[in-house]
Image (cartoon, rainbow, N blue to C red; front, side):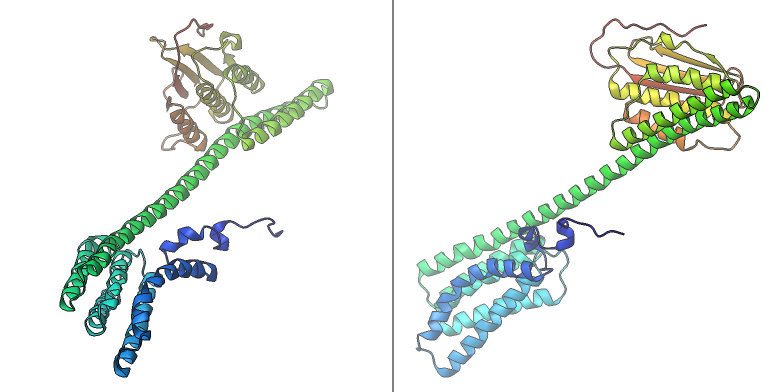
Length: 410
C-alpha cells in the first residue's frame, strides 16, 4: 500500500491543539512543555517565601527545614497539577497528598512567618484542579479559612491576610471553573466525533441503498437483454444486434449512475423512472399497465420527495422482474384526496411473498429512504391477483397550486 502523503491529523501527531491538552496528562514532550510554561508562570508568586529564606534572619536548622519544605511543597503541587487535573475518579493518594499540601502550608506559615501564607493560594488551586467539584466546593473555603486562621495565630497584618485570602478563594473557584470548561470542551469534542461517525454511517447507508437500487435495476435489464439476444441468434442477427446495442447503452448508463451515486448527486425523477419501468417490464415479457405520459410533475412535490418516490418505483419494478414470475404489473400514481400527498402503487399477479421470508435489503433500504423523506412505505403479498403490492407515499409541500396530473387508468 502506498504511503500516505500530506499532513497527518491532530489525533495521530499529538502535537496540534496543545491548549486543549492542558486538561489532561501530557502525552508528549511538547504538551509537557506547554503545560509547564503555564504552570511556571504562577510559580513567580513563590518569590515571597524564597526571599524570606534568602534574607538570612533564620537559623540554619530553620533554613534547611524551610528549603526542604518549600521544595517538597512545589513538587507535590506540580505532581497534582500535572497528573491529576480534571480526572473524574481520583485514587486514595490524591486526597492524602492534598492534605499533606495543606499541612505543609500550615506548618511552614506558623514556623517561618507570614511570608509563607501564599502557599495556601496554591493549595486552594490544587483543590480546584484535582478534587471533584462536589467536594472542592467546600474544600476551597476550608483552605481559605485555614489561611485566615494561620494569619491570626502569627499576627499577620489584616491587609496581607485579605490580599491573600481573596486570590486564595477566587483562585480555587477559578480553577474549578476552568476544570468545568475543559470538561465541556471534551464533551464537545466527543459530540463532534460522534456526529462525524453518524454522518459517515449515514453516507455509507445512502451509498449502499443507491448502489443496490442502481445495480439491481441495471443488471436485471442487462440479463434480460442478454437472454433475448441469445434466443435471437443465429436466426435473427439484426434483432440480436439491437439487443446487444441496448445492453451497451444500459451498461454505460449504469456506469454514469454509479459515478453520480458515489458523488452524491444521483437523484432520479418519477417521469424518467416511469418510462424506464415500462421498458424493463416489456423486455421481461410482463404486461405493463401504466402510461408514462400520465405524470407531468407536481409543483408542490419537492426534489427529495420525488427522488424517494422514483427510487421506490425502480426497486419495486426490479423485484417484479427478478422475483415475481408475474405476467402483468399495474403501476398507479395518484394524488391524495386532500391534495397532501403523492402515492405510488405497484402490484403484480405473480407468486407473491414467500412464507416466512422477511423483507430483503432493497425493501429495507427503500423504507429507510422514504422515512427520511417524511413518507410512508407498505409492502404485502395480498395483491388482487394473488401477487405482491408495494405502496409508497410522500408528502406535498408548499403553496397549493394546480397540478398537471392525470390519474392512472386503462
